Image (cartoon, rainbow, N blue to C red; front, side):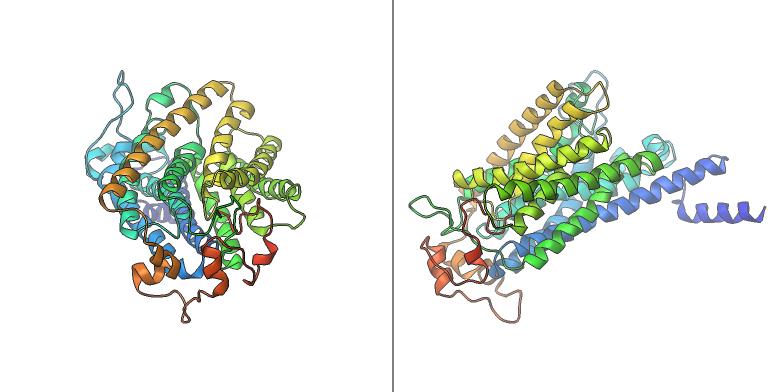
Length: 469
């Protein structure tokens, strides 16, 4: 009797005020477990923003560190607020039966889509509360813009990027998300994306690609003779730390997408996620060995993230053996994608498009090839990939185009040479200002040069010189 009393007190303390639990104590316990796990998963996804920040600063030059960190900080703050103002109710509008399922809106703020019954265990099939759902989904929203941040690093105007983020997160990502996760038209046509290989990663990747096209490459990245000049990052330890933080955060990203604390399915998803990540790292190492005799750490880090992105669409429906294959193929794809982007003179400082766009597409299609659910088809997956690609390219292109025409998009050549930390923020990340020595001056103008520690090791055209995202 005492044990039952203590258990009831504990579950009551964890529950939100006003929740009317059923008399069944076991059912109440399951609800609390689900809700606590979802809140923990939201925290793990939040940690991913620290991972992105560490990764992007490590893979770019020290003179742009403050700018990178400021952008990542703004993305989280603006992303959560815009998701509260309109994003959540754009993404989950409650499409009426018989509607086209393309665009809906439940109103501004959280109260507009909330009623008393929604705060009981009946919400989300009894899984968790309305408030927890908002928190978890808000963590996802900001991630898409973070992908863009790395791709446009070291040459975009800060205010222009901030404007882009507000509209991209608040409108583009959320409307696109409603088509599947909000019960829209793609959901009705059988398109499947468990945790966002397309809805988060490819959407962010398409936005990043448009940013790269509108901005052009960094000064000195591509010489007049067509040769690619590697631009080494400032800290490989920071980049490595960032990748492992992202791997940790993916436990919440994919594990939380089960939308309950179901022991069997959650643990299954975490296993397939980890296997794909490990296979992605190995796949990238093996693939890069065909390009260069010198192993490249940034490619291995890319491979891990490629495996994670690749398995995200089908982590709950792809068996472990196939998850390894999906991850390994993603790891190999990212290597050759980085090479291809450089061939086309598309300068992506952190390899965001290769990781999130290329491997997001692969992971989405992999559901149609390896899913244990016979209802998942390759045709539906192709439709989703095409629809999201077209929509995001048009929207991101319009945003970047309007911003470029009105505010300007790229910093001046002088500001890019001296670093955005000084030009945009009037400060440096470290107590000693990063120098711009003879090598870097020559390097930025597309001339051959040697002398920066680690630069001599990056000799192949295929080497990203620090591409990981």
